[in-house]
Length: 435
Ligand SMILES: [Zn+2]
Image (cartoon, rainbow, N blue to C red; front, side, top):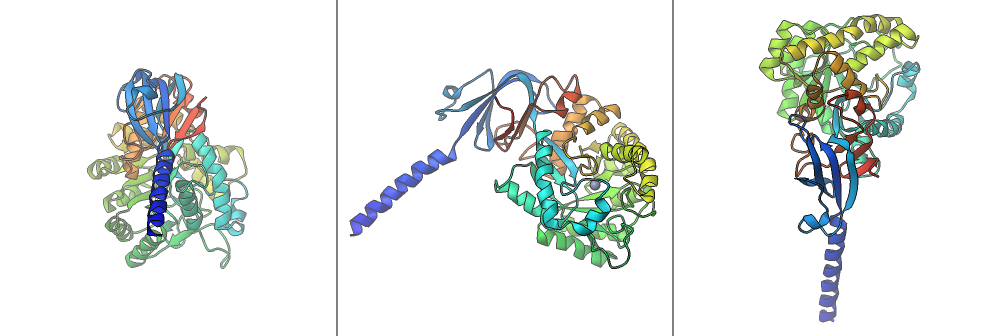
């Protein structure tokens, strides 16, 4: 009896081991005609990328096959010999559970967090198809975005890797709280706090429920339906409390800021990134450089609301006024911050703009005066650094996540080729192309 048990045990072990060996290692090989493995370096011709499961296992010169790699019996070959291959891009500023439109005010009181998550499934596929294999979602329905993030991580749905902030932290009556509703109508999908202690609580609460990053509004914003301008809203003391608490719990902090005073207060408080940064001045540039904070310009959001204000009746009067002022100023802010030596990370505010047109921001950044290669760095290496995931993604190198895209044409000559990637692989899984 005992020996039978032992035999059965041994057999099970053998089966399990061979099953694991089969399940464990699936190999793919990409033949890249042109490869920009690290956006800070030069393009190399005729390169091979070996992918084991979800990770990059090797990058070698020439077109190699499975036989050229030790321990690789077979590998599917993906022919990108006529393509330009580069790391999957990162959008540091999205809101994937909604999209700006005429019905938004009503949706604020009719949509549940589950609705936001369901809509997010579609929006995230569009963002992934646009070549973005990672997004940082800076505010929205908390349970919805955490479910999307975890669902993608666990393989239930396709989408880019998500780092999520949960609710945006906003002062009472501030940018994250005011939509012009009558008293009693709305529980906003923001975390409202007042005073340093209360703001510490709001930060801790986001982290408790799963926030990877903290987002707060340092100033007013365009789309809050209130004529409160775009100046500083949280006090210096409140901002310091938010940043200190987040940092003490290992979370980075993104501050939404348009007005100069709010930008500089956020930088003094020690934030990791300024979102928009519309009215940044010389003092801001000094503060950026001193602290090493990133500027995430989101020109596309500015252009989108400006175009909406001019051509549609989708914005309210209060929104329209701010849109016409802020919209055109955002591009100029990037021109100034880049010239001033500020670190820039790519971000669109996708959700204000339609999801899936994220690549248009690349063109706008070139229009703002950045060299194409600098733009590509903002969307890969720099954004990975801002998100704290440089050891996972942002370059094509052994040990990194297999986040790989390809363009038909050379983006270094024409950035627009990146607006419609012909191949998208996220964490080793082919989402677009690959024939
Ligand atoms: Zn935003």
